Amino acid sequence: MKKKIQLDGMSCGHCVAHVKEALETLENTTDIQVELGTQSVLVETGATDELIRQAIDEAGYTVVSID
Image (cartoon, rainbow, N blue to C red):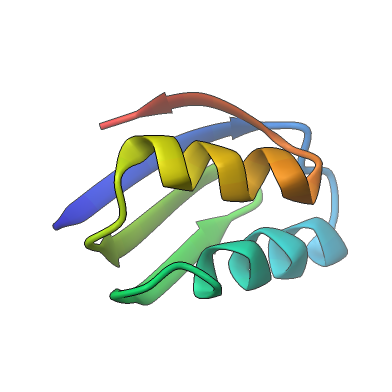
């Protein structure tokens, strides 16, 4: 399922890489597109919203919304 995730706390390219690495740990997750300017992520994943939030929280960023 394609999901758009709105984040808070990303400020540099390293942040983008860190978020991408966190999402790559989730099963059935592909096509991760992290946008620094909008602090958003488009991702194809079978993971639940709860697992997505947990992975991103553990990476040190805040999930504002998941659509």
